[in-house]
Length: 209
Image (tube, rainbow, N blue to C red; front, side):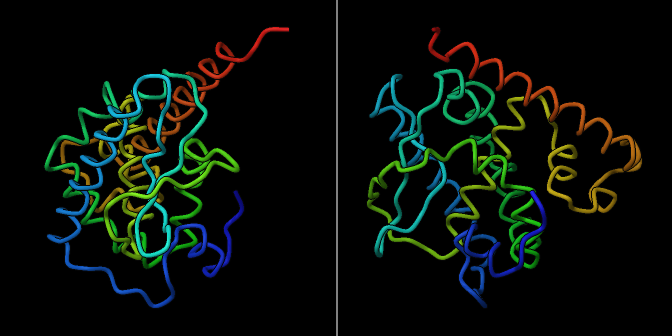
């Protein structure tokens, strides 16, 4: 997508103007609660229906939409590699630590996360209210978690993911890691493979004439 205005990006990410994020340790705890709530809802719904893992506002509470996707997409968050990485404290901590980077550049965040938001969005799907009150950063936080889970399940590592967000991966790599250009090239190849796999899932599930 083309880079949107900051106002349009904030609307897409559900991020209020001049919103102040809570402390990192608070967001780490919230990330765990978001993941646990989403996984519990997926178990409740069963294998034939997937909830979107992205939280939105429904009045004063959080809500999620049901999505129409092939069952294979469950492994991008609710099972398989997606659920595995989301169960790790260090992953939720990293997501919380990167939230300020994304909130300070909402247009860049919108460009980086638009694809995952689109995957988990079914037009016209109603919002299902959750018990949790809604926080102004919950859509961005839950979207960041969903993006990490999706890409990790597709084979991207942490540096690949950071590069996919458009962040300066050079600031995160160790001396024995590949250089930034190599990480970027590897990330792009893995994202292309992810898209090809997901396109195949969609094609296999499409009704035959």
